[in-house]
Length: 235
Image (cartoon, rainbow, N blue to C red; front, side):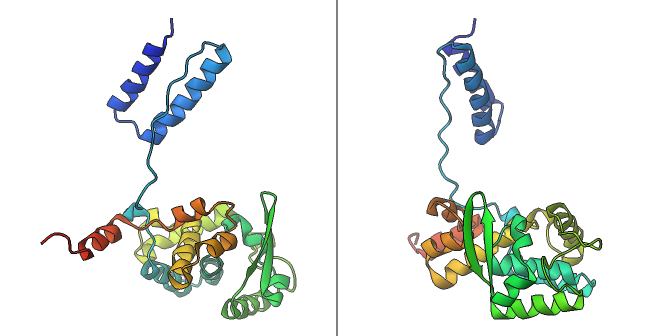
């Protein structure tokens, strides 16, 4: 028979065998759902996980690494990829929102994005608009999406991901740091350092909660260690 004690013992077994806390909680969610379905009146408590105070340095993309990626893309003739990286990093949009970067939006200097039932308008910098229009003219794109495949279809998330991973070695950047969402985070960190306005940043990123935005601003462990050293509280 399944009892509260045996269910709690299974939770302890998972902890003793080194499963990650989030993995354990996902497994507990599944088993608790089964218990509810069976109407056994058993529920195993989830582990309480404190919000991560710093990011893993192995996934931290720096401004210098971003610049190296751009240089490598241009040097290898990947103009489209370089411009995609700049667009993601200069606007903070998600890779799935890249389709809203159209000739019409660039001409207006702003793009209206609709996602998950929410609509927001983002501004495009003058310099970015100039580069996007120049690229569109070169590719003979008069209207609609700017970033297209050779067949004329909008470029996919999968294609961008593949091209980025292939670029890593030439740029001398760890592949674990290079994925579309990290450009969005680099935008968030850079924006906040300049403006110090988390509420406005949340609006730009399209977040419903500032708590979500705070996750983007989490610093690396190395940076937090340097901040602790600067406190000068150890003689």
